[in-house]
Image (cartoon, rainbow, N blue to C red):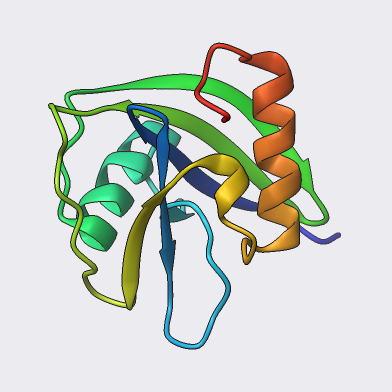
Length: 127
């Protein structure tokens, strides 16, 4: 029996902008990654955000579980300090703050995740 891949996915908002990251020669996505053995989804979210962007969230809010294919995303919203700077680290080649509708090259499955989050949390910036 195939086991679901568990991932922590983090939504970072500043003003009306969301943070997107990408690996070299890849589509844009949200920060996040694999939940390691012995790690809670929240611990993975803290670690992935720090490893990929160098940012430290003041707090994380669990938003939802989102399943697509064999992946289960634990989706969190990070509360950041005022205009926290993001810098690409480790496997991440670039970080970019964009309005949700202004990032056309987001992975398709991540675009669907974002749409699902916005349906459940319409207060998140989306324009």
